[in-house]
Length: 125
Image (cartoon, rainbow, N blue to C red; front, side, top):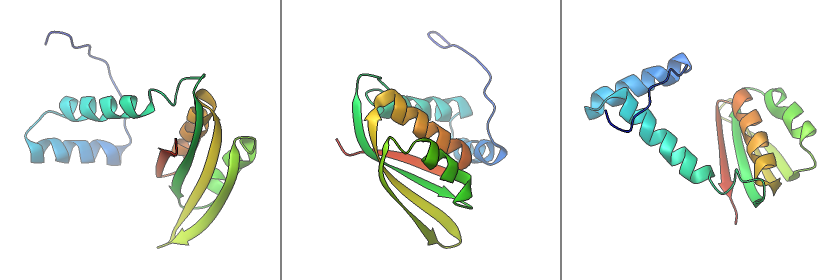
């Protein structure tokens, strides 16, 4: 393939299984699924990951326990305007309004994603 670079990526077993199933259902390769997902991720984060960009947004995190991400909230309280924690169908949903440079908010969001089963950053501006 022209213009393609190969490299290995380790994925959680559940994610790899979903990629495999999706690729079979859609009749495309796993690489195509991963490439499209990464491109969308990079486009969505491009401005917000820039250290000069001032972010205002919401980070949503779904975890088994608040303790999974409570320390991250404490460590980043300078960038968290407000947060709430809810229990929904046996899961913990934490919603944090965040403000800070793109690189700071990106680090906070990635830290949460390492501890939570689902994390989303939604820009408010």
